[in-house]
Length: 341
Ligand code: BDR
Ligand code: CA
Image 1 (cartoon, rainbow, N blue to C red):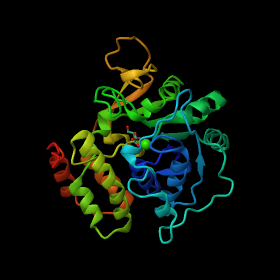
Image 2 (image 1 turned 90 degrees about the vertical axis):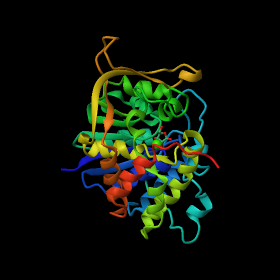
Image 3 (image 1 turned 180 degrees about the vertical axis):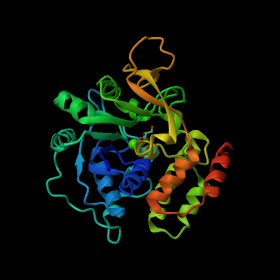
């Protein structure tokens, strides 16, 4: 039987790949997609989610707009990583323009995301899994509104965020989703709901080398071409900031692991999020060796089979347009630091 899921997301280039994977996965029954600020403004991510779902033939899935700002901080979006629109070089005019495909209006889908999450939980007979691919603000608000419902009806939260030991991507030690709203991430981690944390320790290995992006672009598949166009921007960012001739595609890994946890290895541990300002804002403190003597509150992924995950993601999202050899070659080439000029 398919697993009932709600996808909370901020598309976002890698979120878009994650959505493409999720809608093509029969193991998941997607009850709704909720959006929020993060990679772009809340307005843009709401539009982008509907656009991407329509592109992948899933406009039947309701999308609910959520938090425009963190719980207690000013919103800061990641335009240098995901582009002004949140979808790389694509601009809103192109998204809505003639020939670009229309974004369907959805009757009754304007409910604020945290409340929509509670509605979906209340009406479900079974427990629901939440796939959290952006800052945790919507989930923290849902917890604040009705903690009991969240605790009784959420089977688990599989979240992309944090890092046990890998370098940060927003400060030297902080991952973006936790950094964007540390108080929300901390509230979710302390909620008592089972959590699997898919952080930079494992997502940093999901590298789409530029050679692979080129294969997608020239594959003749319209959907692969669309994802390649998004990733063109992402590669530019990673060349500049990470000396990587490719891009790290974080979010689909959380979806893949929700479908099949055997793609990686997780270790239970106690995790908390640093809610100060400065360089450690949003840092996840993962007590790997149990120094704090606290009950583990998350299963933290520490290793993953990257080649298999990339193959699985692409095959589901756009079909078999690249070979396992293309993927393996890309992962090898990605070890060579990118040199400018
Ligand atoms: C996370 O932040 C965003 O840039 C990505 O969409 C991903 O969810 C990676 O740190
Ligand atoms: Ca995201």
